[in-house]
Image 1 (cartoon, rainbow, N blue to C red):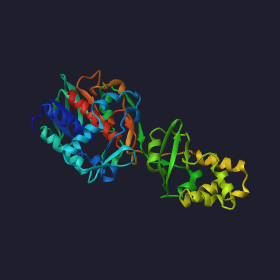
Image 2 (image 1 turned 45 degrees about the horizontal axis):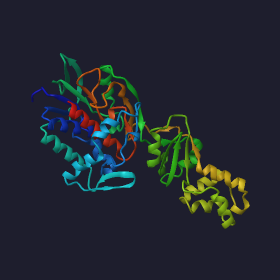
Image 3 (image 1 turned 180 degrees about the horizontal axis):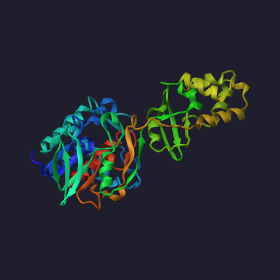
Image 4 (image 1 turned 90 degrees about the vertical axis):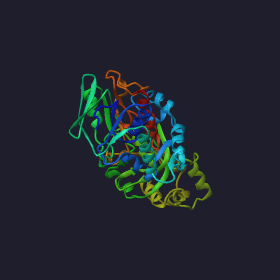
Amino acid sequence: MNAESDAIVLGAGAAGLMCAATAGARGKKMLLVDHADEPGKKILISGGGRCNFTNIHTAADRYLSGNPHFAKSALGRYTPQDFLGLVERYGIAWHEKTLGQLFCDGSARQIVDMLVQECAKAGVTMMTDHAATAIEHRDGRFVATIGGREYTAPALVLATGGPSIPKLGATGFAYDVARRFGLSIVHPRPALVPLTLGPDDTLFRSLSGVSAEVEVRWEKVRFREAALFTHRGLSGPAMLQISSYWQHRTPIGVNFLPDAAPDWLIRRKQEQPRTALKRTLASLLPARLADALTERLGLEGDLGNLSDKVLRAAEARLADWSFAPTGTEGFAKAEVTAGGISTDGLSSRTMMATRVPGLYVIGEAVDVTGWLGGYNFQWAWASGKAAGEAI
């Protein structure tokens, strides 16, 4: 194999595959390298195996970053409709689920196969089961030691993601390389990850498997989706969403009845005074959850025996029930990594390091983290496309 390329892309995930295919289609000689035994490992497990490949509501305000404007350029130039067009050209059937999420009807394998075919058509050389063990910069070229051999190119693309889901081989490799070239790192942390609860909330941990639609709040950020109680704490889409914003030793608030009108309990008391609070809540929530909430509220007996003041206090607590998570389930269970290589040193148009010509950073390795529901894949496609067009 010729060790000379126009660019070496490290990481054959969503962003790396898109970047290599895009640059290769422009006539660039691309070498795509991954330590895993096949490309797209994270794509294959996404969306329950059906790959939530984009979200039609993609916009920069659905991403967390030290620079909230950074993602606008790439996302504006490669949209969900652009990626959907590629999916449809390959005849891949898809469907829209809630909140603009697009999934394959069949398997996530279809998305990986599509991207691999795009790379093959573009003449990309792909090396899987090969890890880059050293990266240097000599005489204006990047030198990557791969399998004991040196490969050189005027451009190097870091597309190895962050440390989330280490069982797939995820590491902080991109951060190590970035630091060597003087790029700064925003502290990486687990995102889209279940929250853990302490002994004070043992009652709720005992509800493992119970799910309900709630509105969860952390400071000014709110999400309305399903929450799931687990034996360790809180999960489900609503909790995964808020986890990306949540900071340690701060509370989150949960509205268990987001559709309830003011004074709804008092009206229920007037209509059904002989109905117990537990039974009233059980008509609106899963029975086990209704039992736990009633026990915590400490309100036994019929509604008719409770004062309006007491019922208003119960309403208020049900509408903003405070939980104090003790932490998260960490990178092992995190769908993505928040933080990463700072956008301060990158061009939002090309994804190239402004002080290191030829060094590009794309995808999850960058300090750009999307909401749950296909947003992170869209960032991978868009940032990979931006770099692929600039190399």
